[in-house]
Length: 150
Image (cartoon, rainbow, N blue to C red; front, side):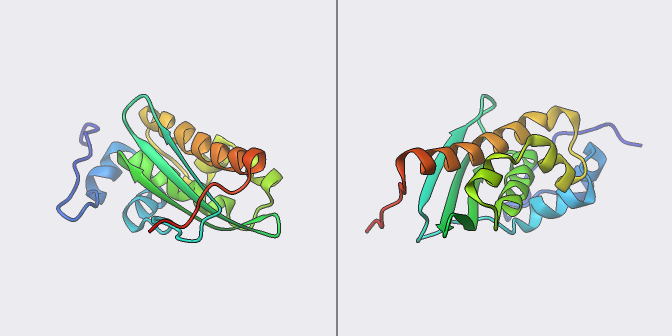
């Protein structure tokens, strides 16, 4: 078995699944990372919030709220595979949730969805939960933050 390695980016912005597996990522985490099902910008978002982590990773969360529930959720992530996978999972978890339910999403829920991330990537899970909670809290406190931009 190979030693755990740093995960290099591939040419088109993806990450090498073989190296990720060797580093200890679950197949589910690898899939979230490379497919990025919830990546993007919502032009009709009601809330946009950004969080930067101490390691330099950053997550921008876009939420569309309809009738008190998160109707759509997307994120843009600048960071490592752990940050990408965690943010994609957090966005998946929040879809269809009321604002109260969204605030109840915990780090353990993200871990459960991803099945496993290497121990040194636990800060990525914390950052994703923090980004999600910040977006919901800012929406609840201040109302919609996103105005259409030219």
